[in-house]
Amino acid sequence: MSSYRCWAEISRAALRHNAAAARRMLGANVALLAVIKANGYGHGLAEVAKALADEAQLFGVANLPEAIEAREAVPHPVIILGPALPKERTEIAARGFIPSVSNYEEALAFSRVAPNERPVEGNCAIDTGMGRMGMAEEGAIHELKRIAALPNLHLHSVSTHLPVADEDFAFTRRQLAGFQALAAKIRQEVPGAYMIHVLPSAGVMSFGASAFEMVRAGLMLYGSAPLADLQDRLQPALTLKTRVALLRELPAGRSISYGRTFVTERPTRVATLAVGYADGLPRSVSGRGAAVLIRGERCPVLGRITMDLTMVDVTQVRDVSLGDEVVLIGRQGDEQILAAEVARQASSVAWEIFTGIGSRVARVYL
Image (cartoon, rainbow, N blue to C red; front, side, top):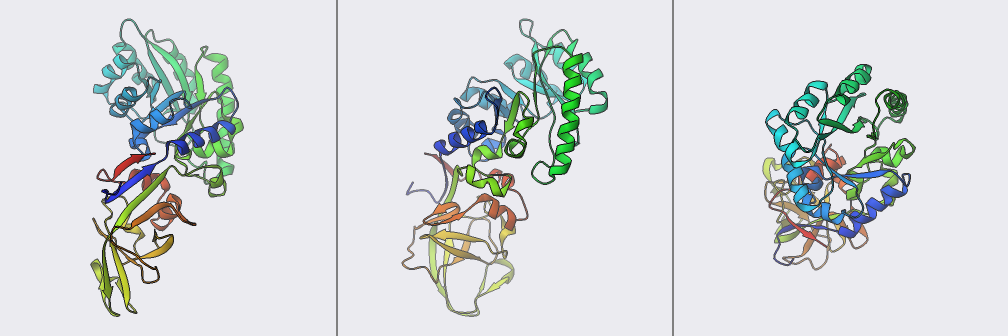
């Protein structure tokens, strides 16, 4: 790794630890759908799938290209959690992926392109508050009956999504109670061996008793808790690193970076790092107390983060040298910077921090 300018170290053991933590929060017979969309939340889709092959029963992706990549890595069932484009339906059916449908018309289209020897298995989404996809809960039973009657589409699962499981517990409790009542009616009126799933990571960690037959664990698998007070149950799987590329002694009164938003107030030793916002260190954390770890100490970011380079204050750090490892996300010595910390400084979320790690950042699997 000595040749890397900027790289992410990803721990397979941490991924498996987090999957095991999810299992402990659930009943023994609840299936684990590992969400590996968006390049495994920036961790690498194929390698994450391989690492979790023994822990997960299914994998979830956003679209057809991701489903193909997942199938090349592991033989597990793959659910496409987003809506398919019309031109993608034939290939989804031919490859045996599980599409998510929001209405009878979508289901009918998949039934018509199903291979002769194998019906399409479909995940039927119900909208109970997300407003993104899914059939209206008021007419869901009627719609599901029509879908269940299609000749070449079988119900694999019925699902809904929680929009505020990590923010508004009162709303989520009401949403879950309403969906549980609806699910009981669906079971009565729509026969079949389909599974029901509703809980994402925040739901798994806070509402595990409402797990039904399957859960969709995403962020927690990567070691970032959507609920900060539960972070100690997880192990961060990713450490984002770069190197000191340049060291300079600047006098008081010298401006740093675009916009001259920072001016030194004293003689300052400045390290220029081989990382910028093109690599995944958000420009929006500039001027908001962001820091990096060098030799186990926090070093403040100075001025605006640029596309390829970032400047930090190393005046108080002894023996900093060119090529030293710098931790942007992760642990070094006794100090740690979580993705959630970077997200707060960026007025964002950990999901965006992970998925924003650029393509020129090497992924190294441990």
